[in-house]
Length: 571
Image 1 (cartoon, rainbow, N blue to C red):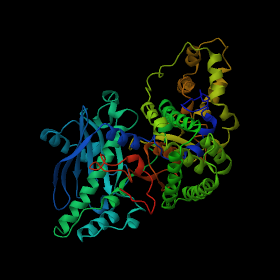
Image 2 (cartoon, rainbow, N blue to C red):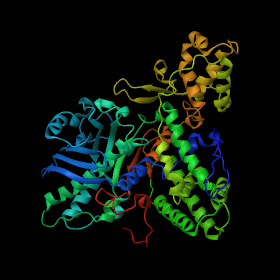
Image 3 (cartoon, rainbow, N blue to C red):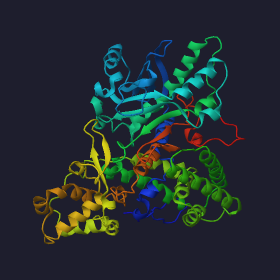
Image 4 (cartoon, rainbow, N blue to C red):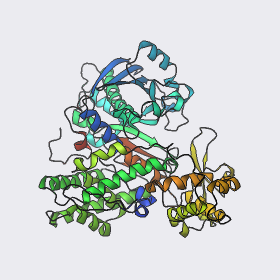
């Protein structure tokens, strides 16, 4: 399946990149946002379908406490973000999922909100996991202020001046979410209730609509607090500065196993991106306009990389390599003949032998930008019916399963799972928060609680036990004797149809870095910078640079993803 050819107008046949190359943690942890990232898909769809937005309620007092609502109205439906603003003491402000109080709490309601709805939700949403919402709500979320930057911006605006972008850029947000729950959690509508709605086609669209509207709330809050301080002198944020403010997010181990637990969905994401790359590499002749746009975006990506600063040594080294790779790319473009046939394929093949993995994957994302007509339609397929292949085919013959395991998990042959370093980690679920955690097998008494998140090891164990059975025996008879292999049997049958759904690395090794898993997922969300705080959690900024609801109709969200060039006339 990974060698499926792609043919486009004005193109020749091109294969997708091999699974064994793409699905390595080092490469997955080097992915960048692209035209297929879910934030960009959402804004593109809202704009093209003519959605309109209004703030329907603003009852916030001088202390910053109260209620606000934001409505998104589309061709057939509307959704309303309900925001509760709280007066949170500094000593209670925490990014940890176990926090019990926040600066603001939110829910996204299906349709318009009545006073009865607001009253019902006011006794639940501020308590988050301790409360309950209903199937008329799609998400539940909360956020805390970046105290220093929030106060700095409010102080500037109250004095009638604009904040310095150099102060904003390193942080990038006034508030950061610590959780955005959806798909049935805490009483919210199950995905089956809204999955067929065209505005939510793809992945995580209700959650990201919530975050985008939360972004508008954060700006309204800082401007409101500035007015409360100095009503006679306070001003609003300049639109260009405002656009450089996104929504922060802290993401930890709770999200890391997602890429292992959802192989069909991950296959749809990765395959869409690989298909897009294959289509662009197959373009026979690039127009001058496409070439000019690509060169400009390389320059803008260089600015983004220069503005990207982190303390974590692993990511800092990657950023240094990215900056070098982008400079090397810019130098190459300045002297290369970009009018040749299949210029993008030539450029990609040059990158394979010249750039590091970080630079290669940045280049992949940039190559997609000039080609919305070849790329954007793929976003509609970035979802999966994960129940479709959940049932194990017990009639399958042992020999067939043995072949699938050998071919799908051939990469595990080089791993000696008898070594302590190869099985050093244990994925388990914490009793306190029912969240995924990662422990040390030989230092903690947690092996009995291990989750099935080591497919390579489990495939080798299943293959060893399959040796007891004849080729024509059924899988049902095998699993009757070895029920411990049910999960890897189901998984093998599924990923045989979804090859990009399996990570070709040891996910319990001592050297495994969960932040590679996190970054891969968050690149598909659309994050432009990643700030690891350890090897197990990181911060990102969402929607930085994107238009706000009041300007989406006039601005192209895709053109605003990368920082503008210094001499450009930014909108």
